[in-house]
Structures are given as C-alpha cells and as structure tokens.
Image (cartoon, rainbow, N blue to C red; front, side):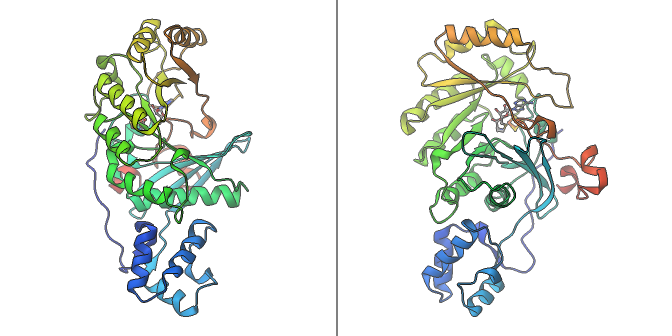
Length: 379
Ligand code: SAH
Ligand code: SF4
C-alpha cells in the first residue's frame, strides 16, 4: 500500500544540526561567528573520530566556545529504540526513531576475515514495492534527509566501535530500507560527507550502492567522479517479468540499465554487480538464466545470486538447491561470473529485504520495545 511522501518540521529551538553541514560549511559558519577555523576541525574530530556528540565533552575547546556551540548547534541523533543481535554475535540490527516518529532500521555485520559492514537505509519505506521485499510493503513514507542518513551511519559506526569493539573502518552498503536513487539529492549530499577526510573519511571504494535503477540516476552517480561500487538489482531477464516483480513506476528498461552500468564501469573503472534475487518458480528457470547471460555479454561484472530471504507477507520461497545450481551453471556456461550471497542476520530479520518497521509486529510491541508510532502513522 502506498502513502504520499511528506517532509518533516524544522526543529523548535532554531539551532543548526551539525549533520546537516559539510565539514567545509561548518568551518565557514564558525569563522563567520569569529571562531578560529581550526576549531571546526577539533569539533569534527570529536564527532567523527571519537564519537562524542556533546559539546561539553569536547575538552580542548574553551568553556566559552563550548557554550557558543551549544547555543547555536546541535548534534541530532535518532533515538535507538531497540537493538537485536544474532546468537553468534555477528549481526546487530538497530531500530532508530527519527524526529517525527518515523522509524528505520540499520544493520551492523561482523565478518571473521574482513572489515565489518554497515547496511544503511535511505528512505522510510520504499515506493518500488518489490513483491519479495518487506520494505516494499510499507510504501514510501518519506525520504530520509541527508542529516538523517548520516546520523544513522554515525550510530551504527559508534555501535561497532563501542559495543562490538571493532575499530576498523567499515565498508558501507546502501542496501537497507529504501531505493537510494529515489532520494538522490540527499544521497549525494550524504556521500560527500562520508567521503570527506574531515567527515567520516570513508573512501568511496568502501561504499556500495544497490539500486533497482534509473539509468539517468546511475549516470549522475558516475558524474560524482567517485569510485562507489555499483550493484544493479535486476531480478529478471525480460522487462515483462521485471515489471511484475518491481511494480514501482520509475525504473528503466533492462537494456537501458545495462547500458548505464556499462558506462558506469567505463567512467569509474569499477566492475558492476548485477543482483538477482532467486525465487522458486518465479525467475529461477534455466531459460531465464540463458537470457540473462545473453543480455550481459561483454559486461565487466558479475551476477550475484541472492536466494530469497523469507518474508511474512507472501508465500514465495527460495529456489530448490538444484534450481540454484542449474541457474548458476547456465550463467557460467554463458561466460558470466557468478557469486552466491549468503545473507547474514536472518534470525533477527536483518537480512536483505527483511527490513520493515511496523509497530504491530509482535517483537516491536512485546515489552513495549517500540512504543513509537508506526511508519504509516508517522507520515
Ligand atoms: N532498493 C535497493 C537497495 C535496498 S534492497 C535495491 O533494491 O537494490 C538491497 C538488496 O536486497 C537488493 O538487491 C534487493 O533485491 C535485495 N532483496 C530485497 N528483498 C529480498 C529478499 N526478500 N530476499 C533476498 N534479497 C532481497
Ligand atoms: Fe525498495 Fe529495494 Fe525493497 Fe525493491 S528491493 S522495495 S527497491 S528496498
């Protein structure tokens, strides 16, 4: 079901949220206020390197500057409503309540042999309504502001460092709730701060953006001249089947998407991943695999097969093991590189496509863990 997007109200006390400013904008604001420029860098280091959000704790600022900062600025963080962890401790899902009561989920994943990963949301709900995705059932409630995307990442990063003791710089995937390219302006702004050495300092090569696509949006992403990894969610080899699976309005035709992906590779040097959620007897036939191999001829990239993670709202099933291996073989025989994703966090509904926020779900209402309004009511 679809709801119309809305925007949120400005804060009451008129202070400025630091997450709404780029590092350079903060330097400018502080020098305009008569503070030394290097003070901005001290403040940025407290926030982004030491995860300190309270100006009073920034001990290398004078008392006067701390007071000035408290009067004029704030570091606005969503409220952490709930944290769920898998039994093996490798995955944590944070339920975050935004200022207007809307909630989103973000996921932290540890891996035994490589850097941790943050899985990040970009919208409350999603307009694309993919049949197999829990977020799709929410409709689009609203876009997240750039500052909300950033404060979510800040909390996930802090959880990683403080609660899980993992200090390494994580990789980040825009694979949480929402379609990133449907919230392009806020996404681009957030990426700027993530990539800024005085902000999160996360190299663009450490970020992956997953999209059902608009070809034009993929081209504009290439215009940023960064080396963000692109993952295109394809899921079908014909437009007719793809339209059924992704009923949203704004996706481009498969050929246009593949062209845009090819250009993206040429401009950024990054190999493209095509994601394909495999669903039993929906899109897992060998014929579909052969068509996909033909479409992808000459592309520098791979297909990442994602066996469906079960969701409550439909009866869809992951493919039988035999169908998965036949599908994979057909692609490989067509000369296509293939990987299979083993999603982390299923037991806490933190795996791909399982993120959705609804206060009527039992785990949210149990013990009053999520007392805030549901996304539909927050809108
Ligand atoms: N909106 C973007 C990013 C968020 S979804 C997109 O669709 O690409 C991130 C990934 O999870 C996508 O590849 C999506 O197809 C996949 N996904 C969604 N629902 C899923 C499910 N139930 N099981 C497995 N993967 C799913
Ligand atoms: Fe939106 Fe992606 Fe889920 Fe589709 S799979 S509904 S585009 S979040």
